[in-house]
Image 1 (spheres, rainbow, N blue to C red):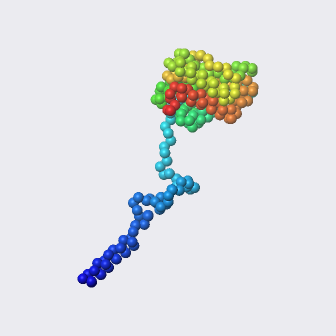
Image 2: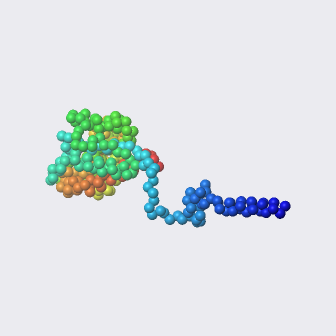
Image 3: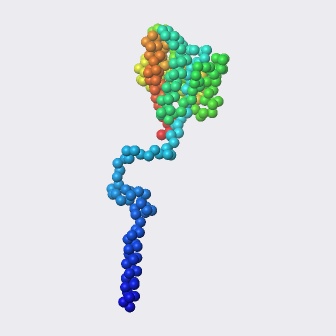
Length: 258
Ligand SMILES: [Zn+2]
């Protein structure tokens, strides 16, 4: 009986030894992914100074709207010319359109340009303008508005910013509202003389299929304004002004996605 008891005692002793020796370490537990997570409380919330790059970064949010920017003229149609420097309107408006496209992309608006280089859409002027006017329709881009960018010339004393809309556009009310927001933001951004919004049945406006405006940023016939218009800094400011005007219109017409 005594031997039997000591055998049970020894078995019990070895079982106890086995359990204490082979206890799973914190690394092997199913719940704890790391020793620090399972062992420290409260958890260490200081950010990792060298975080591992996320192999699956979040995709950029989709654009809230698609729009068309139309840098006026192109190719042999040079537009207005700087009276002092001989700079060409077609080159400055393309630069402003590029800056505007960039600024808008940073604000979740995808802008398509009717031209991205120095060319006309068609050798015939009327056909060229019609192609621009129908760009939103034929490109199937679901664009919600159209902004044509130009620079005017008149005489040495006239300067300032003007924006046109057409009541013959299929969206006259929206076009006028867009003209207002673009004019006001542009004037505020570049500090130009406000020459207000005006009605004009330009072909690119009246044959358009979305709300459309034509911006005259300034005057190349005015020596001081010409000096400003040729600098990339002023062109970028003008682009921000146009971009802010477009954003304000999109927000007012519930295209902002908010
Ligand atoms: Zn022009």
